[in-house]
Structures are given as C-alpha cells and as structure tokens.
Amino acid sequence: MAALAGVSASTVSSVVRGRGNVREETRQRVREAIDELGYRPNLAARRLRSGRSHVMGLALPSVTVPYFREFADSVLREAQQHGMSVRITQTHGDVRRERGVCDDPYLRHVDGILLVPVALGQEDMRALTVTKPLIVATASVTAGRVDSFEADLFEAGRTVVAHLVAGGRRRIAALAPGEVLPAESDERYLGYVAGLRDAGLPVSRRRVVSTETVTFAAGAEAVRTLIERAPDTDAVFALGDALALGALRGLRDAGRGVPGDIAVVGFGNVAQAAYCAPTLSTVDPGREEIARRAVALLAERAQARATGAVLPEPGHHMVGYRLVERESSAVASE
Figure 1 (cartoon, rainbow, N blue to C red):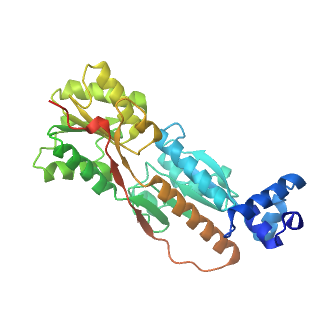
Figure 2: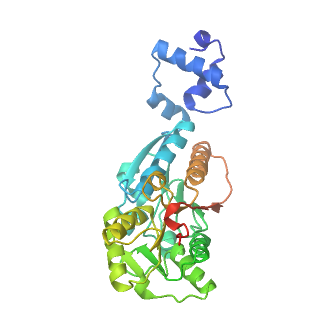
Figure 3: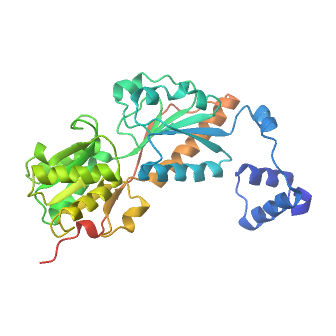
C-alpha cells in the first residue's frame, strides 16, 4: 500500500489508525490504495499487539431521546478519528444499570466507557466499581473518582430565566424530568429557581411540572397540566428539547400562541429546534465539545492503561454553554 500510494509505511499506518498529522491529499492517496488492494485490518492481531480492543463503550439513557441520539452521533464521529469503534448500550435511566456499567457483560472487552447518567447522585458516584477507564459526561455531579465533563448547568438555567425576564415574562414555569420536584438533583432546575429569585419573582410549585420521561408526548401532556394549574403562565423553561418541542404542540392544541401568549425555551439544542415552527430557543450545553474532549481523553487513558504509562488523577472538566435565541422566546409584538 505504501508503494502504491508513494508514501512511507508509517504514513499508511497513521491513516489506517485515524491518527497523525497527515495532509488530506496524502490521506486520500492512501485510501485509494487501500480500496484498490482490498486491504482489511486484522483486528485480532491488532488487539494482541496493542493490548487494546480499540472499542469504546457508550452507555446512555436512550437513543430515542433527540439529545442523546445526537450526542451518540458526535461520539461515533470522534471515535473514528481515534481509530476506535463504539458499542452502545441503553441504561433507560435505571440507577442500578448506570452504577454497574463497568460490570455490563456487553461492555466487557471495551477499552473504556463513556457514561451519560441521568439517575446517579453523588453517593452513587462514590459507589461506582471502576475496573477500566470510565468517563462521565453531561452529568450534574462531580464524579471525583473518574473523569467527568459538563457545562455549568446552574448558570445555564439562570441565564434562561434572565433572558425570559428581559423579554417581559414574569410568570415562568419549568417542565422537569423526574417523578418528584428535582430541586436536589438537577442543576438546571436550581438555576431556574435562582434566576427567579434574582428577578424578585416567586417560586411557585404550581408552575413546576415533573415528567417521567423526556419525550414529545410528555412535553405536550406536561404543558396541558401546567395550563390547568397556572393558566396565567407566560413562559416555559423545558429541561430538555424533546419536552419543549412537545410543549409547542400542546400549547398550539390549547389555543395558546408562542411567543405571543407564552414563550418557550428548551435545553439541548437538537437539530430539530432550528426547523420547528416557531423555531425553538434553547441552551446548547457544549455537546460537540464534550464528545470531542471526552473521547480523546478516553483513548489517551486506554492507551496508558495498555502500556503502563502514568496519567494525571481524574478531574472534573467544564465546557462552555450558550443560549441560542430563536422565535419561541422573542418579545411578542404589540
């Protein structure tokens, strides 16, 4: 392959492994040589030589939730850049499955695991059995014993409320995942509460509707409940874009205009948010950055484990967030 492409064997190796600083023109020549010769890597030999499977695990609640589906897509693309494939398992938000992810037989032979939890609390994190490189992503907990990545969800929630208040909204509701009020477990909700207090607005339990799932149907049902409880609500912060998108439908069915009667802001910045009607204002919690940095670190830690190298202690890594302002939270025209 090297002779056919006119490059060195090490350059071919870099292209095959998805590593190294190889010019795109050179990379394309190597790919053409690979196709012409019909080369396929011997994965068994590669694993024996490197002491690694070059497979990572991704454990997330559900691929049917838009945010997690798009996060998985980002992880798949990043893993490919590091010469790794991905095994995906769904935990369905079950705390036992999240806590025991390193013992999951399906992920037995992976180099490391990227876990996206929704049920784990601080005590659960401390109880994790860590038998291989484990990184926690997009969680509202400080992992401590493992690497973790997240945006400042508290400040993100606070920013959403400040945005709504600046638009003249005063009776701001929240749609939040969880069977009970998420005051002790969700930083987005705590930021929502802090934002209301910053503005001198009351925190009303009537305006917090919990949902068992993060789906379109749950969002539509939650907003119907909200209108029954607090019909004078003029803004909704949905702690998940699927809930927000469902709320848009529920508000339309109830004859409420968005943003004229009620403003809506979601969380996640999924692709559909830019194409619904009205387009959805939402928080981008740094999904692409989390995927990029988490996969790179997992690959680094897996390689160190295979070679016996020493890496720094695990840490908690923050990424930036941004509020994407669209039509659903615009100031209503008189």
